[in-house]
Length: 379
Ligand code: HEM
Image (cartoon, rainbow, N blue to C red; front, side, top):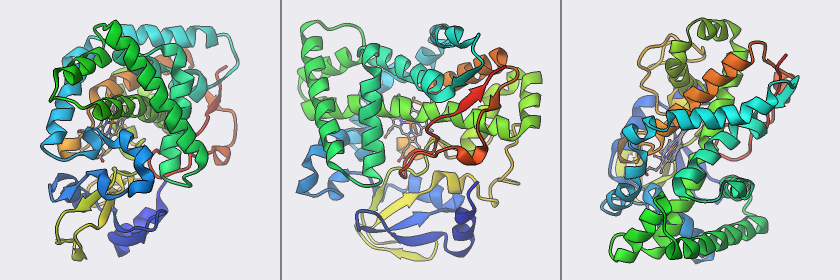
């Protein structure tokens, strides 16, 4: 699905570009180079180097592990990590299945459904709201705010984005005040306890970590579910194989992450010193962006990369990143994806796309890779 990337990968794998905000940078499309950038600590993430004073409102959203370097990174990741260990996540299986069933039961006698709005979006957002301890009923607000932030930062930065950001910050402030009075055993209560202890988390970082988890906790998994269903519809023989062998679902999800991963680009990194990358001279302060999907289609690493092939074994794809920023939510995303795909295949043996593939509307922006809606006929 990525012809432009093939050309870049061959002709100019570390390609100089001008990003929408005017900054010069480099776009990396080969697998080996991508790994080098993601693992090399000389590429740093502290976003204060990107935004000047006019973007102060944004800084709350970047005081978190994704936009920090060691030693802050370790401290911030450590505070959230306890809630996402593989063991803890595995213990959520039955509950996540119940949520999935609760969403799918009312759809069962319908002839068509909107996969994103009615299932792929609510499932992960309900789960992340519960982990954090924020009201599930407010999920549409979180969706509006996080869509606005994700699409806004990669396209036009309009006034409405700042309005939404202010609303998001105000909402979190009011919610934190409630939790300070009546703490529970959720993650926000634990983070607030760490903040009140003094040197483990600042107030700004509390906003930063919680907003990151709300955004990262659902924007991506929605598209893992959506993109996997699209791939299974595009390759019916693979769908049949999976229906015959549902035990292959985890493997099929890995292939979907490789074939059409929900995160298009890793977040930006900056060179902290002059260095060379595949023959190009990178200057200190240069912005470097890795296309995870381009790397995942590199024929030097994956045989027949344009084929969606669920029999691929142990795929070393980069859809969750690599190195110290490797996705904290990977075990959760994999479990949600597995339950979602298993439930959809089981309930809807005859699902078909209700519109022509060419009519699918891909979401704007450079961060997420997913469609706005997937209308399916289910019987
Ligand atoms: C980091 C992808 C789901 C939380 C990342 C990164 C990628 C990624 C590529 C690294 C970005 C970089 O290095 O610039 C995905 C994909 C997901 C997914 C494809 C779903 C299929 C989730 C979920 C959570 C989550 C469900 C929620 C809890 C995070 C956090 C980080 C992160 C907190 C930052 C980690 C750090 O900086 O140490 N994710 N993610 N992600 N992800 Fe995910």
